[in-house]
Length: 562
Image 1 (cartoon, rainbow, N blue to C red):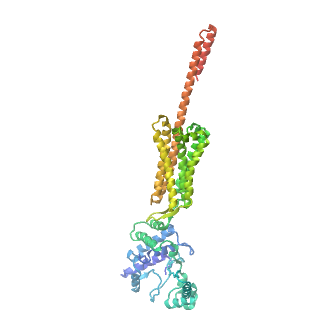
Image 2 (image 1 turned 180 degrees about the horizontal axis):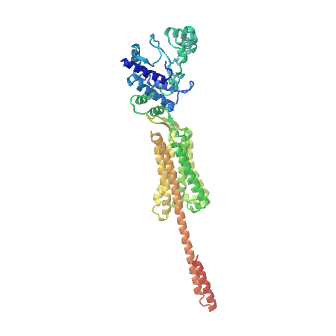
Image 3 (image 1 turned 135 degrees about the vertical axis):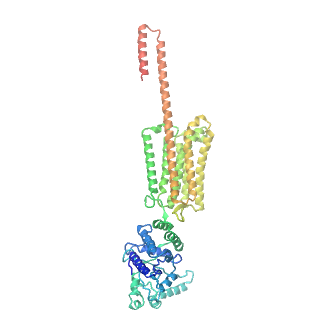
């Protein structure tokens, strides 16, 4: 009997060749047993299990090279010593050919057969000593709804059926194999059964490995396998990848085994964060922020902190989805946005509504602006804190012929209310900013503030709304969904900080122009004053006049050379 699949292939090729010389074209060298309605998917896993390296190894990973080699060998056996029709034969068709003496090797489940032409053996493996056998069993349970007395009687009956004595009797009379392995050490049992064969079996119980719906899973596995084996639509590697994707839950990580997207975006976020922090420190060191007198420096710092918080959400999107991550992502994103907008809202209120009691109160003491900031943030934090008592659920999206992934889902009605109130609050802040911009857009003295701060409000609001809309939509392409979320957050940070740099440039430019005009005006005033001094001393004597004229000329020349 062949010990390896290569050995079986070589024997099959040789026998078929010799039988053809005798005009026997009906011989079946190997059936494979990949019938759809019986054991197609289990035969696939059984074959892959026979390709493991060591005896005690588990089922090889389906996306491993070992599994690819096994699947390619299945197809090679079909192409070289079998056919599509033979691989798809039912057990009854194969047995008919067996009894007619037209089968060399055939694979099927063990059953008591009184026929001397059949010699049972374990399946071959990729290497000698390695085999596989898919084990099916029946489960017997006791109804939990019955009385305690009936439960006890049922337990006694089950104990009797599973006792070694009854198992020995069934094994010897019906020639069925028992799960009590010690029976195969008994001489009287081995006189009836092939105990040596059973001891060599290397079982795999697929139903215990696959935790999900086994029947539904098996149907999908066979569908993908069939397309590869009998329709030649794809490769072994792609077929196994599709099978893996049936149950696999994809997450974006820094590992590049599935994709390098996570690592690319992580590095991108770190680089952008580093650039923002370093450039901002340069501003502080060079006192560039001193030019930002129309918004307090500490509020400019808050805008930068808010921008960095939005980038933190991008990092939280990497890794396994958890309820805590869902909670913190929403809280940090809304807080980061508010830290970008509230300092500008503060400027709008104190500039446009400067006669109002609220504006006068904020301008009366510098600490009042912190109270205003704290009040605005507190509303958001209250909503976020309330959501903590109604945690997010993790929903798994099953994608047919795609990547399954998980999303945050708020199923609690109270949690949904607080999420909605949080959205409404942010919308109100946006609305107030835009109403103030519309109200004051025609006032000429406010053109500079509106022209330079409006892009920040507009871009931040635009990207935030788009991000929330995409989060509410079900996008069933996992990688595209991740890229879209990350890109929006990165664009939010880049556009926001770019506008700040632009405003910085405009302010510095305007300040330099103002200083240049101021210096020119001072110089002209000096020149005019000294000229007047010469005219007013005309009545002095000639010697004094000569001295003053020389002094004035030299002074004017000195000034003009500066």
